[in-house]
Image 1 (cartoon, rainbow, N blue to C red):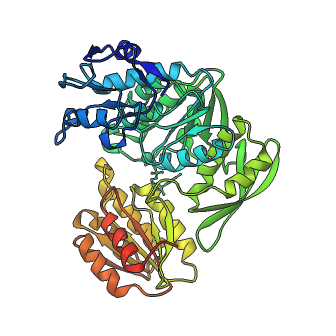
Image 2: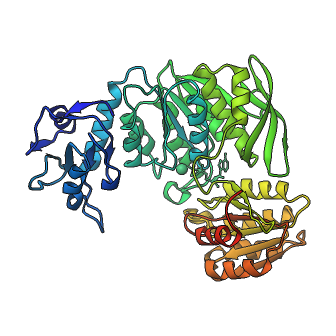
Image 3: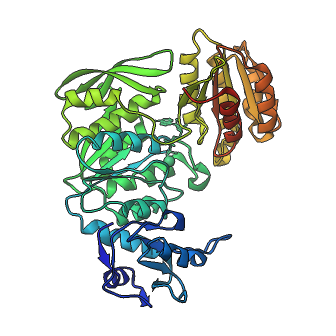
Amino acid sequence: MIPLTLAELAAAVDGRLVGADGTATVTGTAEYDSRKIGPGGLFVAFVGAKVDGHDYAARAVEAGAVAVLGTREVPGVPMIVVADPLTAIAALARVSVRRLPDLTVVGVTGSSGKTSTKDLIGQLLARVGPTVSPPGSLNNELGHPHTVLRAGLQTRFLVLEKGARGPGHISYLCGIAPPTVGVVVNVGVAHIGEFGSVEGIAAAKGELVEALPADGLAVLNADDPLVRAMASRTSARVVLVGEAADADVRAEDVTLDERGRAAYTLVTPDGRYPVRLGLSGRHQVGNSLAAAAVARAAGLPDAELAAALGELRLVSTRRMDVFDRPDGVTVVDDSYNANPASTSAALRALAAMGKDRRTVAVLGFMAELGEQERSGHEQVGRLVAELQVDRLYVVGGSAAPIHEAATADQRWGGESVLVADQEAAVGRLRDELRAGDVVLVKGSRYQTWDVVDALRVTGGAPA
Ligand SMILES: Nc1ncnc2c1ncn2[C@@H]1O[C@H](COP(=O)(O)OP(=O)(O)O)[C@@H](O)[C@H]1O
Ligand SMILES: [Mg+2]
């Protein structure tokens, strides 16, 4: 964050200084985990269900915190006392970012692929100037301002993931750090339980492009009709990306290699360039095009851009992380999260990788599908059959419709096993995997993490 005195800080968050010197200056980062505090930092004390941050206030000061922002006084600790730390951290982020007029703020939203695309944008922009784009999924009312506060006087680009669990959420986040570039990756059924319909999700995701100024840039997925339609909801310049013939930044002649990595011809208004991605999954084509459009706008020349696309790497864990075990088994760890669209993308990558190999899919429950829970799981089961995945392990009774739909599908020559839990899946896999297999592991958060962690340790280190 920008250096602020405690007096300025207290004014920004409408807080009361207690036992603190108003002229002392915060020069470090704002953290709510006391272990992350360094010299010159600000510790934000939240009261959670299990942990009360105020209990760590003294420790944070010992670690270098100039002050602690919290809801009550702590004896001997320089405090800024506020009514609500979440509102305060948002206010602080707002003030901080307003004092960085040369900063370009990029917002990324979508139903699947926000984190992946944010990571690609961050890597490309880092070639143009100092960029803040931390790994992981810091997309909510806490992670978002926390990320914003990492931008300092040197920062030129701030890349922010914006998640929505309901209408108004993205508008709220855009109010904290107003973006001038907005990227919408796709609209799917993630969190449909909270929104009621796909149209409701589109309405909420579109809040990002509505927040853009007239001299801003909206990067929209031309291949997703609901995203393309958002062009009418923004006054910013629109750049369409995708495989559609009218996309401004386009991929042609997409092929996948034996590791599911795409090669394509990048077509921009200025030329055609060969691109070979190092990331697995066809869905990375669209993600990389979105990142390319942002980088072009930031001034990265096309020829350099095409080479840079080939050097993109995974930044956040458990997303299409492909590794080879010493026993000849290849594992695709896409276990971070799952919905029907991202599972489809992952299964297609598995099929591409398994052309001459036995394919195994380990699939767990997909959460937050609301009324589409059953149909979403069945859809995935049918796709397993259609793609002729050789072996399917469905983990847990709640995911059983995947197993049922796959088994019932007449097209399928493979075999499905429904296992009770992750431990059972690990046991079966240990017995049945053999050299040459490619194994995809995927499910909603935590549903298959133990499986993939076991596959890592029993098989050795990632390649
Ligand atoms: N464009 C995309 N379309 C479909 N699935 C995708 C896309 N990009 C990434 N994914 C997959 O979706 C899952 C979640 O990816 P992530 O980047 O964490 O998205 P989010 O931040 O939106 O939750 C991962 O399994 C990832 O491989
Ligand atoms: Mg995310």
